[in-house]
Amino acid sequence: MEKDWIQVFNTGDTPFAWIVKNALESEDIRAVLLDKTSSPYLNFVPGDIEIYVHQDQAEKALDIIYRMHEDN
Image (cartoon, rainbow, N blue to C red; front, side):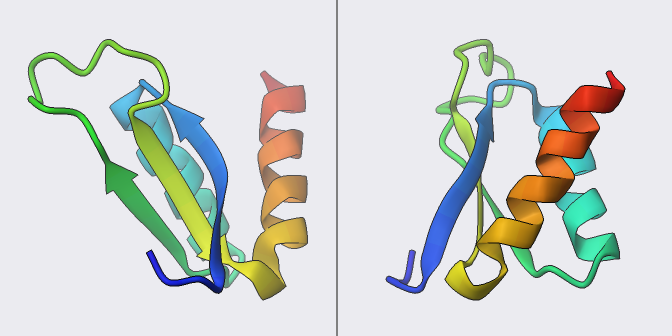
């Protein structure tokens, strides 16, 4: 990952990672999902999927993610 990108979220839940990524992109934040699981069938270890955004958009991204957690 390039130096101007920072991790804003991590999870072991693949579907939820995609929900977060799509929520960020719907707010015009380019998000990159990095799946570090060794097998798509064994992704039960928390924190294996990371979401990165450009550092200029990190604060906005974190606000969106925080609101998503408040709603649940």
